[in-house]
View 1 (cartoon, helix red, strand yellow):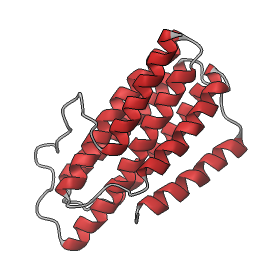
View 2 (cartoon, one colour; view 1 turned 90 degrees about the vertical axis):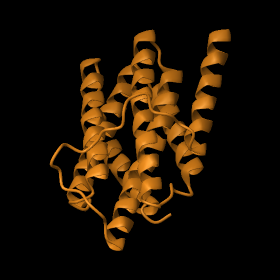
View 3 (cartoon, rainbow, N blue to C red; view 1 turned 120 degrees about the vertical axis):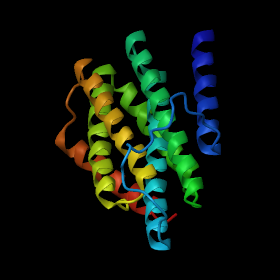
View 4 (cartoon, one colour; view 1 turned 180 degrees about the vertical axis):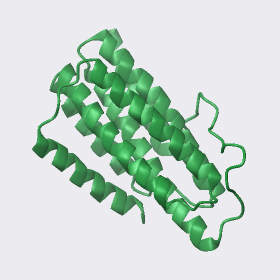
Length: 211
């Protein structure tokens, strides 16, 4: 019982740090490769980069909620540990995107508490369905995020080397999380559920781009 309460308190603390913007990275922030294009951004480029990085920051807010909830509902210690490790790596993404937003003189989404609460509820539902289904949810989520980040790499200004380095590193981490979940025995999600997840993600990204 004590262990259960402790896990919920840790999850609550993680949630507060996520929505209040006080998360801290444990890994060094990715930097642009030597010789990568860079330089001052025009006002239009700055606004575009800020909007895209705000969407990415919202994605990391949701990732924290999902992984914390799935860790709480994991049936095995191995799965709980895997979810907690992924949450730690996603926390780095959260801190990196938040720092980049400040550099771009932009802000996080005003709806972050709502995004977090919704994603946490979804994560609880995925975890309650069982470990293999929960892992399947991770695989599908991370594959969709990887595709989304690839699109942002195409859209980010060519000379915004700082944002591009962060997004590229995030994309590699998401692919790794999906691979880990697949190897751990993920069960493929039904096609209608995958469509529903894509639709929900589209609503979130479209809204976060502006608000």
